[in-house]
Image 1: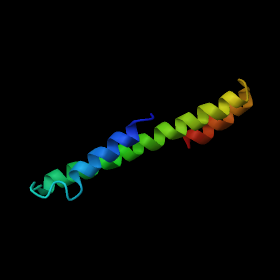
Image 2: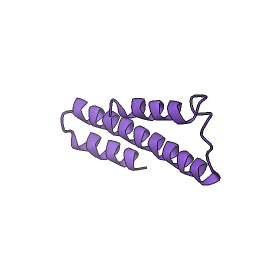
Image 3: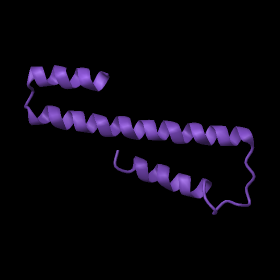
Image 4: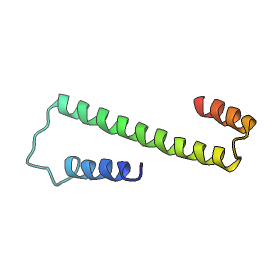
Amino acid sequence: MRYVPLGVQVSALFIGTEITPQFHFTHYDCIIWQIYLSVSVLIIVILADTVLVLRVYALYTDNKLVKWVVGILYAI
């Protein structure tokens, strides 16, 4: 989890900036790049939310009510 955002950011810097002006991307390449960035952001948010939910659950030492409430709110 810790290095996933860094990896995505580094890949975005190498492809999406002035570093790559000699490359010519097709329309299809741009679509694939946008899908990659969108899925990457979604995965990062899901991982961060999962860590936060697990930390809240750990604070309440296996309380069943907290487990259900946090689980339902996370699923929504």
